[in-house]
Length: 329
Ligand code: SF4
Image (cartoon, rainbow, N blue to C red; front, side, top):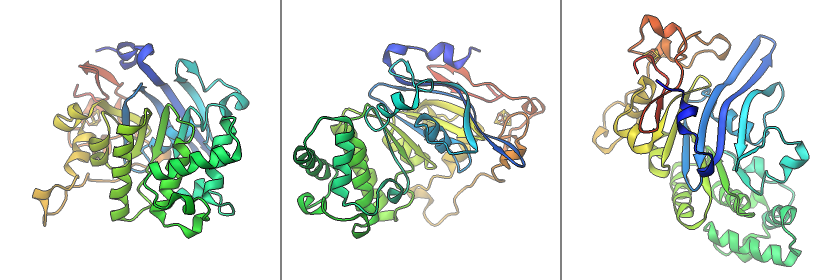
């Protein structure tokens, strides 16, 4: 078997290359390896989903890319290259010109991205003027167009409203408009529907699906829901215990999941045939991050665990650009 990074490296086509990323949190009780050697790529023009349960390290991965990990967390190793440039090595000043312009992030909770004391239109205007030489009037014109693009009705009126006057779904549309303001090459959506109620979730997913057709932006979608990734993305990265367990195209992973953890995630998706029946769930719980098993992190919950699994399996190519970290392969 061959190391994953050696086989998939085609830099010209890759927008984002994350290699052996390590983000640790030094706590009083010990070091939490929230992201423990994560490697994946986002090809230009593609949408890639990172999926895993809470505690898998998927959100810390996106915060590490955006340099938003808060103390005591710190990126302690690895490389993040964007359009071939090492963004992890940039000064804060250099990186500020990338964040919000080339790479934009939409959070789970829209209120964390919006300032409660300013009208929402003004906030989009500021996001535009931070990176483009626009007059206030031209920026407001553009903000109204963006509101209309993300499905906000009466955008001329809505730009003057304060965040608390808008519904949760409307606020998330505003943060998506703000993220798209500078036509970023990469849009990171971190659990964009989790804080919303079910009907609104469906509307925001429809919006993301629609935007994928209309804007020329690559998407990195972070979610606990493998069904959402299957619907919206071309590639999937499955994370568990701060590591990548498996990655490949949506078709590869959903038609023939290799890793026992991916198999567990897929059998827990509700389908129409399952109506009225109990959903399968993965037995056991995510291990305490301070006491991760020394070998495969999934070993305590894995129905196929063997003696060798107490040694860490590497992420290896198994053919057709597909990668799995499991001793079965
Ligand atoms: Fe299960 Fe072993 Fe594979 Fe881990 S390496 S998923 S414990 S079979």
